[in-house]
Image (cartoon, rainbow, N blue to C red; front, side):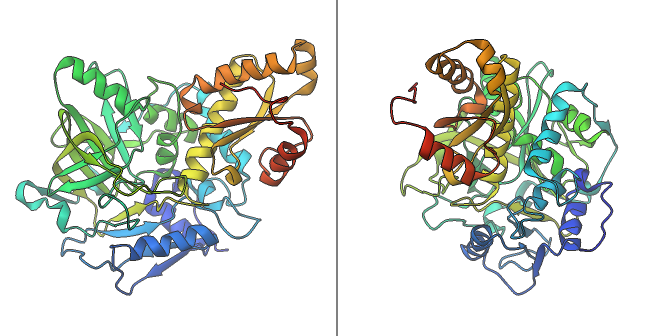
Amino acid sequence: MTTVNDTNVDHSFRAFVEALKADDDLVEINTEIDPYLEAAAITRLVCETDDKAPLFNNLKGMGKNGLFRILGAPGSLRASSRDRYGRLARHLALPPTASIKEILDKMLSASSLPPIEPKIVETGPVKEHCLTGDEIDLTALPVPMIHKSDGGKYLQTYGMHIMQSPDGTWTNWSIARAMVKDKNHLTGLVIEPQHIWQIHQMWKKEGKDVPWALCFGVPPAAIMASSMPIPDGVTEAGYVGAMTGRPLELVKCDTNNLYVPANAEIVFEGILSITEIADEGPFGEMHGYVFPGDRHKCPVYTVNKITYRTNPILPMSACGRLTDETHTMIGALAAAEIRKVCQLAGLPITDAFSPFESQVTWVALKVDTAKLRQMKLTAKEFQKKVGDVVFNHKAGYTIHRIVLVGDDIDVYNGKDVMWAFSTRCRPNADETFF
């Protein structure tokens, strides 16, 4: 493994890509690859076999402006048990041998620290090139078709939406899928209880469209934070600063008052409509299924300007069966937040993880049995307390089943959790339904 300078990996997507190269965890593909299913099929194979991340340098349909290359599987697993979570660890500038618990502890660390506000800079690499007006044509870009039954080409699977509340007190960064509608429009999920849905509702009450930016290839620590169900009203920029120990560098958008990472690969500037809707979906999501023809009406994003750095890279998540970013990040980070929420509620929970074997629809909670005995609760009473906390919190939105285990079970080991569940949980007698 080549030595790499770790000092800026968490704040720079380009440094992150170089770190993967140094780890021998990246394959550059220079032969022409078709973004219609081929790039995603290769990425899907990588995800299902824990192979090296593919960087597609020569996509069919790439324009003279260099938009864009694609990095697949940016947060998936590695084959070696020694650095299985190395790609996630690199997001946070941790050693590639860091355990998943160390990674999640790092993500939670900022929740008890004061935010470190971002540093505003005049310009940055993302301002090197731009497209405006008739120059913008999303249909001409090599946007990937990820699954054959998808309702469209999903440009946004690993980028970061940026929106701000009307009063300016809350700026949210979050991941939510979006597909190309036409030359300068996208449509994507804006649904309860998402933070972008909450902010969309605020602007709706004002009767104004939502100023919006969508950033691709952002600081890796930022994309991790945008995947985590942190509390309503918390601004991710300050959270990431606290977690990494230094401020992120942001630059102002040209067409609105939002600020975006100065070293992002690509930024779309525009608005999210409060009135215009369009058909969205279907999309092959984290459960490994797609339901052909299952479309829903969702709000429309208008792209007014595109800024990008030289030779930009679009990160892509090809969601499906194990293991991709929806499992390693969304599932794992939801579990970390559930751990914190349970502890704040006074519950004797020491660890939490969403087993991959459950397609991250379960969360396994390790119970401090000594403290539980002191609480003098019946099993049913304790189950009810835990369920009421988890299932009524945003972090529990995608969780179907909570599995409570004792001190002898490692919740980060799926085989341990499945063994405990299969041999210790009596159907109905040991279950509470909500």
